[in-house]
Length: 141
Length: 88
Image (cartoon, rainbow over all chains, first blue to last red):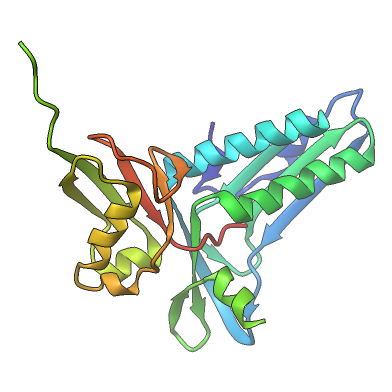
């Protein structure tokens, strides 16, 4: 399954893939490229991945969410060059009620950020580039 | 007739993002003594030029799943050394 993609993310087919008459709650998380990071202007970025493991880890996360909340869940993460405003990641979760839809959606995006081997190199307004290290940010704050 | 156990294992190592930049390569094969672990791979990498920029205990994967430093190596393993993840 292509959970990791180098093509633009289309939200509507993802939502459609989890909808069904018995699922009344659909939660959507869309992560977009923002134009700043720690006070610096960001003009774009590149995502790279260890693709076979990223696919496998994403599939494991989705299976966990389905098992834990009985929700239907779908995920796409973009790799390659992205511009400000582009969708980098989308998670949709559908369940009978909103609580489990929100919980499953939240679980998937948090686990993706924690476990999936994807890396981000930001391009700054001053022309410089840097790999983003979220753990360094945690240590600073 | 008996076959002696191999005295070495060769594994395929993958480096990504800032770690690939640090060592100047993204793949290499390492031949290590039998009984070596994922941690042995890290020790060898840290001894290479630029390897001191790797942390002492980076995240690692063995054959597409997260691995611990003490995991034993099997010939042909794919060992990936993973910088801090930044997806999402």
